[in-house]
Structures are given as structure tokens and as C-alpha cells.
Length: 416
Image (cartoon, rainbow, N blue to C red; front, side, top):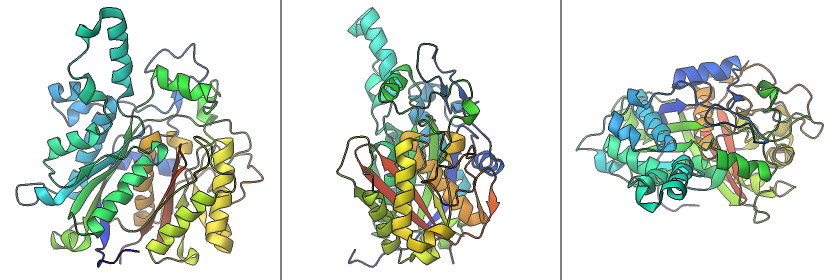
């Protein structure tokens, strides 16, 4: 492990723009009530697509946070990231000024970046020629721009980066931000994940890979993690952002604290470009490393926010991995997949799920896994089916796994 004296890191602010709510309170209320954010696609005409359903963000107005000219020059994924970051800063009551700007950084992950702008500009190129392409095309589509624009919009001049590790990106971003503060390289970090990939080309690609649910006639029942009748994931969009702070910095300014982040484990399956290794070895090690990093034992873990994608391969593999990592304790831990309500936000999923995990600790209540009506015999843990549950959560893990074999586990603990 590390040799330097490690700083304690706490969560002081949260922001969320999701298919079930565009503020932290609406998102949490949606999770607790089992609200389903999945429906027919409205962003484009999906009539010739195999999958015609998604978890779209509804009623989002970037002008609540951005000037019209600024919003127009951002792809939707960047708008989500910047606006959720501003929410989180306001929630933390953290003011960035000349005195602290150098000590506050930004680390926002995404899986794809500005795909919508890329598709639109490609069509302009083909139909009108290269001279008609927008001069803002490149800065709108590149994946790092959510992090860069967040810094521009907030004045944060500390460490700034972007993680692009598919569906693990948001969790990698939170974990890397945790390490930056832990090592003394920043006092606070704006971190999480964002994604806006509900586009024709994206759906064509994922559908060709047989990854998406085609339960088009019943979208409300399409995302069903750990259920025997699951047939693929449902794509979502949005952003989840956390404000992480060095404990002494947070206490000095009297900040409220949702939870403490104590562990970060990351591994790679080194197995296949899209499929997880069947025995879940990589995911198992990620959980073990996160617990080791946080000086935790399996007996201390109360809740796991699962990756839980509703795909045939992931749900069984993750269940096996949880059993291997937690041993006998696995049968006593509550596990849930919030993707059953939001869909899968790809690079944004780790962000909104870290937000959900922090809120579960703060409120001692865990979100449900909805649509779990016919459990897969190979998925036999307590997945909190149907309704949220009051449950003391002192320690929680949040899992994220991505194409390429990336595995991430974050470990959180109630602050004391």
C-alpha cells in the first residue's frame, strides 16, 4: 500500500441529473419510491432500430445553470457534467475563490463523450461539405471537455483529468479523485461521471453486439437485473457528481458530511473485449482490494450497490464475485441495482451510483431492485426486490465494470 500518511476523505456535496430526477432530492425520492425512468426513445426516431427504449433525462434545462451561448457550445454530456457539478458545489456550500482555487480539482469520467455532436457533424460533412462543419465540433465532442468546462465554469484550478474506461469511468474518476486528496495533492475534488449516448449510431452499435434489451412493448419492465427473464441492458443518460474533501478542510469550514470514502480497488480481467471472465475473478479482486484499502472486513459490509446491468452474463458473474469476495457474509448483505430504475448510464453510471450509495449511508435506507419478479436461480442473494428498505448502512461498496475488462469497487463508511 501507500507509504505516505494518508488523508481522510469525506463526501460533502452531491449532484445528480438522471432519468428519474434532475436534482439530488428528486433522484433520491425516485430511488426510494422505485420510480421507473425508462420509456420509448424521443431523442431520435428509433422505428428502424432493434431497441427503441431508453432511460432519457426529462425536462432538463441547462439554462438554469448556464448562459445560452455557453450551453449551445457544449454537447449534452458536458452540459450534464457541468450542471451536476454546480449542483454538488451548491449542496456542499463550497465557494471557489482566489484563495483556494489551486487546491480544488476536477475529475469527471465518461465512456464515449460527445457522440451526438460527432454524428450531427458527420451528416453536415457528407451533405454540405467540410467547410460547413462547426468550429466548435472538436471541443464539443472530445471526452475531457466535461472536466475542462467544469473547471472553466467554477474556477477550479487544481488537478484536472478525465477517465475514459467505458462503464467503469465514473467510479474510476471518484477513486482517482480520492487518491489525489488522500495523497495531499488537493483539498477538494469535483468528481464523478457523465454520459449522453442515446443516439442512432450508438444504439445501432450496441444492438449489433446483442447487448440491449428488445423489450420494446413493455419498456417499464425491460431492465430487470438478476431476473431470469432479463434480455440485455437499457441505456440511460445523465450525470452524478460528488464533492470530496480532505476531512480537516471540511471540518474547518463546518461542512455537512454524507459519508467517508475509505477504499478503492481496481483490476482488469485481461480476458475479453466485452464479456466478463465467467468466474468473476477480476471483480472479486476489486472488492477485496477496496476492503483491504479501507481496512474493512466482509463482516462490516452492510450494502452493495451492484453493477447489475440486467445482462445474462454480468448478473451471474457479479453474484459469483460477491460470494467469493464476501464469503459467508454475502448471504446477509443487501445488494441492489439502481440501474433497474435509471437504465445504464455507461460512463455516468458510477457517478450516480456513488451518489446513491452515499445517500444510503446518510439515510440508513437502501434502494430497491425493481422488476425482479422471477429470480435467476444463479442469482440468489438479497437484491431488495420491489421496494426500498430501511437498513442500517455503516459500510457500503459500489461496483462498476466496463468493456475491456475494467473492474472498480469503491468503499464507503458512515462518518464518525
